Amino acid sequence: MSARPLDPRPALPVVLAGARGHGRRHLENIRRLQRSGHVRLVGVCELRPLEAAELTGFGAVAQSDDLAGLLDSTGAAAAVVCTPIPTHTGLALTAAARGVHVLLEKPPAPSYAEFLRMADGAAAAGTAVQIGFQSLGSHALPAIRRLLAEGTIGEVTGVGGAGAWVRDAAYFRRAPWAGRRRLDGVDVVDGVLTNPLAHAVATALALADSTAAEDVTAVETELFRAHAIESDDTSCVRVSTASGVEVAVAATLCAHTQEEPYVVVHGTEGRVTFWYKQDRVLVRHGAAMAAGPPAVYGRTDLLRNLVDHLRGEAELLAPPAATGAFMRVVEAVRLAPDPEPLPAGAWHAAPGEHAERRIVHGIDGLVAVAADSLRLYSELGADWALPHPRPSHGDPHDELRTR
Image 1: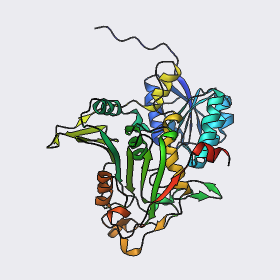
Image 2: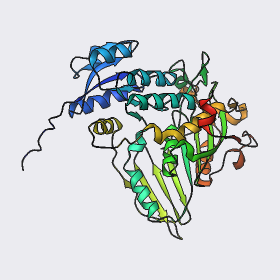
Image 3: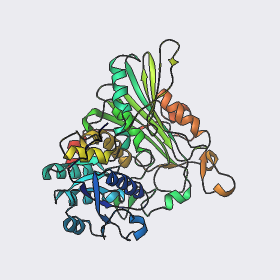
Image 4: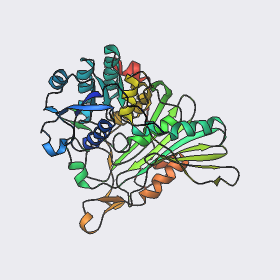
């Protein structure tokens, strides 16, 4: 058997902005794609330059804390932006002004107005922007959509999402903006549903076929915090959509035990559960809610998809237009009253060496029941929850463009 010929096209020159923390994952992904000949790392934008050992195997890589200058000097065609949330819009527009395409880490912006400024600016410049919701690259999504179209679980009645994660106080000290709603007068909105478990919200909206901003008619929020932070670590939202399919997502960073987050599509004749980090799907249907073995799917990497898009070979999997509904949720969280501190009796400190971690009593089960029932914490009888959800209505295009 003859060997497959190598792709003769040159690798796409890429700059990485933000190479520490979560950015290390992007650095390793770029390393993988450079080995396969799809990209070539030409620059790293960091306040503190990477050590030579961290760049082993990349070849010559320019480093600077000035993204504009780095893009100009390297001739990069694309930039991966994994920097603090409030900087996303400015850096994406810096790239767009130079004709540089962007993979932008989620959440794309801390407010809907900043999101529009970024999306409109990139569109005017003719540059592509891919939002870093890796779950939207899962091959499970089109497979689930086919199942729904075939009526496997009957009529879709709602979509739930659940995320029970474990984080300690050090997580909120990892950066000055961590766990903040605002910093120095600038929006951050680093809450459990808008950043660490944002994929649960975006994926649930995608499976509800409600990804555009205009698909959202209302958002109800319940925001709480067990840790001594400004933002929320235990929250839920319920999104009303133009199609009538409700989306409810509950999440916490104060679980007793970390679990794989998931999204569940409710139907009149069954359910589809999707563990989006694992690309694993379980279908239950029929009177007995029978289930076969879970199916595991592949995934298209979003940077690779951006490269293929720029070569005219693929549509973007997560363009700004596909994340407008998610940004409506971010905006509802931003505009909601500040998160309520949970009373001391609602949580306890983890024992021993994990004493800086706070565990909300019964939250693991509550998160699961919320996704299963599409109800909010207050409706499930949590004695620490607000008695009524707080709705946010209105057309964001009219509301925000005039601010």
